[in-house]
Image (cartoon, rainbow, N blue to C red; front, side, top):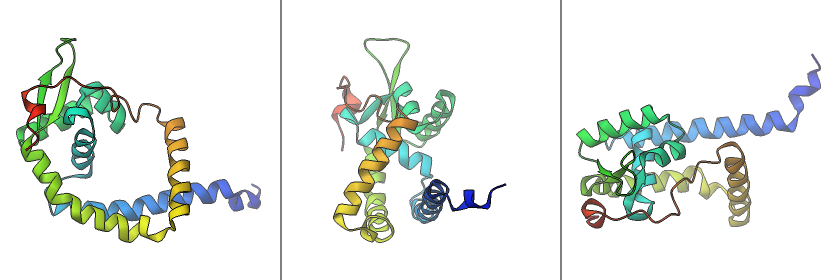
Length: 169
């Protein structure tokens, strides 16, 4: 094998990405655990809270999180039992349902987010000059869109509102 292949900047780029992800994930996991959330549960809550009406169709939630539809169903089942989410039938398609953040789920996010943002600032965005952060965000979006085209599924369309979605507090 050619030893120069290990000096390839592509290997370095992916290696640095994996190392940065592992380091940040460890810090996030410890902080989320203090609030009784797994990283998957936090991602689900955050994606729903950032979506129109604090809700997404289950299929869109699966696409955004890279979980299988059965994986999303299991996570949503557990979070629904914990009172963080509820399901709502889709009025236009009886085969679909929405996952909707409850007031309790939004409260848990409100309690968790300050510490989460401190970690992001200290260990990620605060390490970069504004121009470097803008360039990184642009590059990450390009890569994300190429390798995970469903990552924003359902986030820009207006979801129908229901009683659960209309009462965010």
